[in-house]
Length: 299
Length: 341
Image (cartoon, rainbow over all chains, first blue to last red; front, side, top):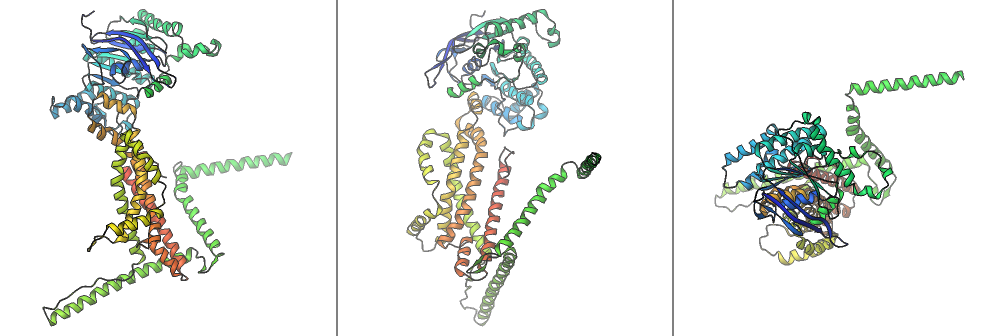
């Protein structure tokens, strides 16, 4: 589309060392993302979604290929690619305000005065509707509120790209819906580029401009990309009866459950599985044991 | 058949009655409040009472060369005696100084140019003096150890190389008994600490350094573990923020290591207190340990009771020290969920 691409992943491969030799987690992942685009990554557990995100964040380095942001290669983590972590990762000994402040002080050192920084932190807390809890510590607020503060911390760095690793994965359905609405609101206002990992098909269709569906690992790659051409602002209730919405939704489901069956399903007999496929994809807190293990190895 | 049913009816009635009574009692004391009260006060009191009873019964059966093993009553009597002795000694000391002052005043009145001196009181230290000495010694040893161990623990936790280098040394010295250190410390202090006008008594230094040597290890190990096991996600946060090394250490690594650090300090203080009593006994350094040893050597009919007083006091002080550390931990640590066992 643009002759100069905003964010580009080019032939990204990554190998993790294991006791039995290198393990190829990702192979030939290529993706171009425009400025302000909202992209979700979806795929089965262990397919390397988080690894893709971590490579864009700079927390992992690709074995081959690379990531280019605004014409410069991504070599290390940085605040212009802010990450919202799955388990919020707030510092438990700091208040909501201080958690946001940690990033703001780092990014705007010498650019904003003290008063400006204070206003900016408070503005970002208001943006995620957490202004009332600015002096609360993480253990005094609910999971959804923690995730809001985590998002405020990321937004306050004024990132070009917001990377979200299953940000709402551990939340109950109602809280998740609230946060999705907040996120759409914020995205409409600020226009950040967003890459978000999710397990939730509805969430993916509701939020995204494009859904990137990944094949199963090892050597996972991008299987299919779905453009969601629903006009914004989107209303979850109106969309529930929308034909296009349901068409997109079934498109993702077909990819996940017909073409990319869960890896463990291939090993077990189909009779064992029952008819729970459609339900299980909505499970909010799917764990990714493979991914967790990989992250540990990667460090 | 008939009797059986009536019996059952009666039992059922009885059970219902008991249920109601219990429900009434508990509702009266705000559901659960009574149970809590019994658990926190009633049960411990009952256990202590049983312990005292067992003690007095069993002690009466043991005859030693110093007479019958003292029971709680005898120990309490000696506790009071020790308090009396302490007060008598203080009165004697006050009188001693008063006499000197009076004599000096008289001297000065007779001859204004007379040289007057106040001689220090040199009576034997009382039980309470010994307690104070022990407390000062353990505090000194523990403070020195903490000042050394916390920084070493932090750098060891942060650097894999340093950890590999120091780990064998730490593991080697950690299990060494204080009694093995004591002769070495004593010889080194006598050799190195030669001063005409010493700030501290040598015996004090010996005890304090021995305590230090034994207090170091738990703090080093726990601090290092705390520092090296910072949550990887938090480290990733600092990487994304590109925090400089110092900010990362101060804002992320140290705070998350604080709970472990305090665990180490608590262990160290507990060990330090135990070590001190042993060191004082063995080296005849002033303190509670010396008190115990002196009473043992003294061998009067009251000695065993007085030693038991000391044992109880040692235990109580150890408990208070541990609780003190726990309070400090509660004050300084963000993790308020520390277990109070």
